[in-house]
Length: 214
Ligand code: TMP
Image 1 (cartoon, rainbow, N blue to C red):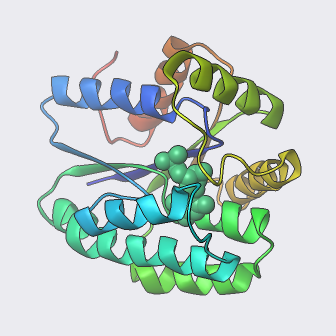
Image 2: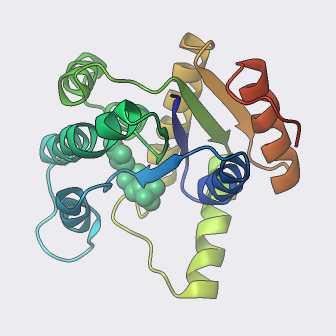
C-alpha cells in the first residue's frame, strides 16, 4: 500500500490537503493511517514537546537531529511498518525529507550525515510518494503571523528561525524534488485548495493507486 509523506514550509497547507485526501480515500473504502513527524507515537509526541518548546535548554543542532531521528525510528517500527503490513495506506505529515531540509539545509549539518541517519532510523523505508507544497518564504511567514493572530497558537522554536534559515529549507526541498522527480510531486501551495486536491488526485490515478474520478 502507498506510503505518502507531505512536506513544505510551515503554513503551506499540508493539513488541509491531507484532510481532503483522507476523506476521499475513506469514501473509496480505503483504510488509511494518518500520522505525523515529529510525533506519531506516544514517545514521539513526548520528544516533540522537548524539541519544539521555546522555554528550557535548547538542543544543539546535532542533538536536535538525533531527537528527530529517534522519533523516526520509533515511528517506523511502531506505526508505519505495522500499518503497511496490514495493507493500510499511510499519510504522514513530514518524514525524512524534513531532516534533510531543516537539519542539513537549515542548520548546515553535512548532508551525508543526515542521509546516513535517515537510512538508519527508517531501515530504508522511504515514502512511495512525497508531496511538496511549495511556498515562498515570505508567504509562509505571513500565514504564520495570521495563524498566531487568529488562533493565539505561538510559533515554535523552529518556526522562530530567521528568513535565511527558511530559505535554505525551501531550497533543499526543491532540490530533493528535482533529484527524485519520480517519487516527488511538487504543488504550488498558493493555488486554491480545490485545485491542489485535484492535482494530487490526478497524480494518484496516474500512478494507478486509485481508480475513481473525483
Ligand atoms: P510541524 O509544525 O509541521 O508539525 O513540524 C514541526 C517542526 O519540526 C517544523 O518546523 C519542521 C521541523 N522538523 C525538522 O526540523 N526536522 C524533521 O526531521 C522534522 C520531521 C520536522
